[in-house]
Length: 196
Image (tube, rainbow, N blue to C red):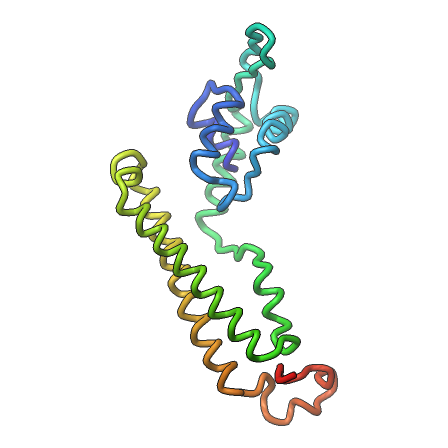
């Protein structure tokens, strides 16, 4: 959606300009758009009939620069993707959640320390985002909605920071990881309480 949307917004546009814009947005960090895949995606979108090649320019020994624009089919696809993302909630895969599901495999002191470390890393990210929000870069050189996205990321990071601290305290208190009586239930015998 990001590449299709940018071509739609900037058209006619060279692939290089799409790549540069996405990098300036740090889209590789929050939209899963890797810089190395942008030219491949442009070719694939063209092969699928969502983009069309307007021109190909060759200047000296430089690589050829292809200019793209969105087709009618691409417009329809962009509108469909855009609305699907606005009207649905999808949790992005988070490797931390996979690791956390094996909490009992970690010694309690290490698990609590790791959560406190995660909270500290999140706090540092919050401070960085606050600085960005207060900066001239966001206030005067970016659309207002960019600041609103930073506010969303801030709220999520602050909520996760508080959660990390709360769970670290529970782990340190020695609370059992399983409800009473479940330790002997079938399928749970291999789980420890993390006290090793």
